[in-house]
Length: 115
Image 1 (cartoon, rainbow, N blue to C red):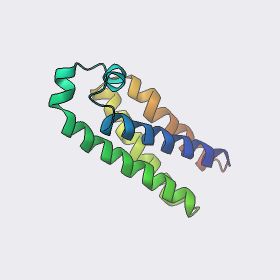
Image 2 (cartoon, helix red, strand yellow):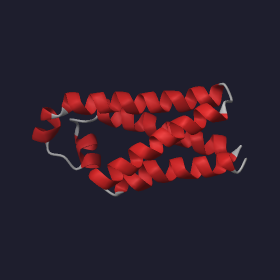
Image 3 (tube, one colour):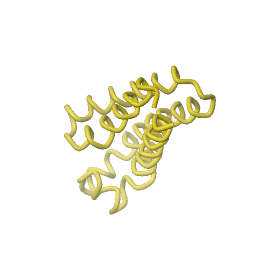
């Protein structure tokens, strides 16, 4: 049960990231979250939307895994999130480790422990 709650939280985080990257990217709130200028946001809008789409696929995979109660699917998508979070944390900013990698790790540990 704990693993499913944590997995659901990871999915919700990614739905929020989709919203940030696809809807709010050029808006003041989105720029504040990512620390970008209007000029950068306007120039990278399409790239951010594409990235948001990929985050949506991660959320969809997690939600599907929960819906069909398949731990292998859930694990696979949590590992994808973890890898993306580690890469982002190393290449973009350490905050990504806390927002993306840590929740995925906690969910994976809970899943492996049968919680």
